[in-house]
Length: 352
Image (cartoon, rainbow, N blue to C red; front, side, top):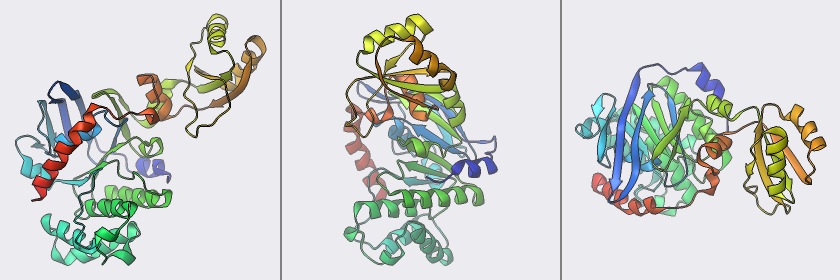
C-alpha cells in the first residue's frame, strides 16, 4: 500500500459529524446481525469498519445506504434520516458493493455515463470524469469494450471507478480492493485521498485487510454485530503493549506455566503463519513492554525447550486477536451470509 498516514495527517478531519448512528440494530428472524451499534463519522474523515466476514459490516452499510431498514435505533447521514428520508440520503452517497452491479451488456464508458446521468452529473463534465477514473483504474484501453468481456479484477476496478464519478458527500466502500493487485490498490487509494481533500468527501470503508485499515483516520472493530473498539490505528495498537513475542516450543503447556510462574505473563496459543507449512511445534504468543530487554531473561531462565523466537511491534491483527480471541484471517462464513441473497434482490429492485 501507499503511505497514507502522511495524507491523512495533512488533512485532519473536521469535528462536524456527517454520519450519526445511535443504537442501530438489524435482526433477521432470530439472528441479530447488527446489535445496537453507535458511532459518529466526521466530515472528511476516512472511517473504517474492520472485521471478519459475517461481523455485521455490510449489514450496517446497507442500513446507512437505505438498502435495509433498521429493526431499531436511528441513523442520520448528511442530516437526513436513513429510514424516513431515503431519497435525500441516496442523493448524498456513492456506493461500491462487494457484489457486482455493473450492466454487462454495456461498455465500461457507457456504465459510467449512465451512472453519471442518474446522479445528475452535468453533461459537460461526464466525459472528462469518465476518462479520469478509467485512467485511474487502468481501463482506458478497454473503455469501449463490453463489461461481459472483462475479468473479475477488471470489473471490480470499474465498480470503484463508477462510485467516484459523481463526487458524493459520503463514499461507501465495502471491501473496495478485494482481489486487486497491489499497484491498482495503490492507485485507487491515491485517488480516494485526493478526492477526500479536493471535493470534501467522507469515506466509509469496510475491510478485513490490515494494511488497508491503516489508511483510516479512525477504525471501529466490529465482531458478532457489536463494536468492540473504536479509535485511531495508532491508539488501538498502543493498547496492545510494547512488543509481541511469538515462541515455538515442543511443550506448550509446560512453557505457559513457566512464563506465568517466573514472569507473571500469560501466554496464549498463536495461530500458525498465514503461509502455512511452517516447522513443527506449538506456538505461543505474549505481550511485553520491551522485547529487546525481556528476551535475554526469557532464554536464560526458562527450562522448557524453545525452538524459535520472533519479536515485533503490535499490529491491528494483534488488536483484533486481543479483543476477539482470534485473528481476522481465521474468519468463517456464518449464518449472516444467508442474508446476501435478500440484499442482492433489494439492489436489483433499486436499479429497476
